[in-house]
Image 1 (tube, rainbow, N blue to C red):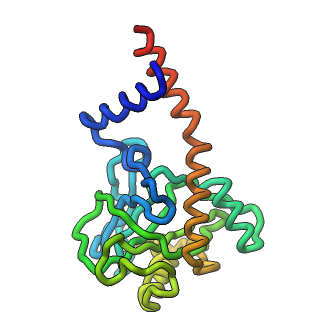
Image 2: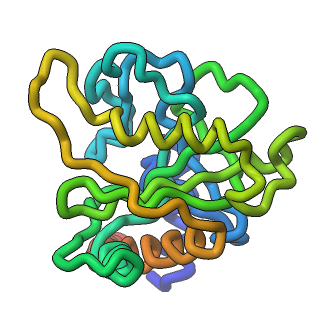
Image 3: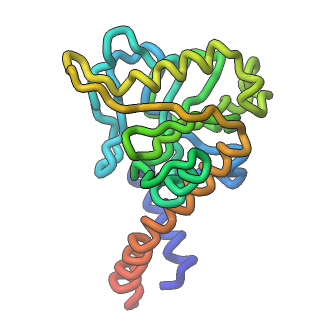
Length: 233
């Protein structure tokens, strides 16, 4: 079976099964200027939901601590992975050593004037900046974006255009959201920089490289299995 036939086969299988949000949703042809985002949690959620990487369904991670509620829709960028490239970029910008990516999809929050009542959906977003966040010894970048076509925020191109109070609320949320209820353990989380759209897009590019490096072997194995199972005829 030729590679084009394999791609066609994979495309047809999506008609009869739900694509995995991390691997089955394309980041978009306009990436990194405009990207697809999978939303996990929205303002008002008192639980922290996150993707179950094996099944592709949302799972409950933990209750949100006290009144610390995510101020805007939050999720991840499909087909991204934060590993060596993302960790290296963090070290370049901070002068730190021994920083690694957190080995998760790239986190992103999307500013919109509209109320999005629930997660488990995809939308188009324009990256305008981000937080260079370090959790222990791991790079845990948070991209900040605006929803494409949003009447109030959709024309923004850079973090400097985002209202200061939104940036401050997001900063407070990310510095405290990993604290667990009734736990005396404090996580060492810090935001070293608030960066612009240019750096945000570089983080996205690097997370794409990390993703391709991590999952290309899996794709190759899948193609070989399809070839061996379906290509004999």
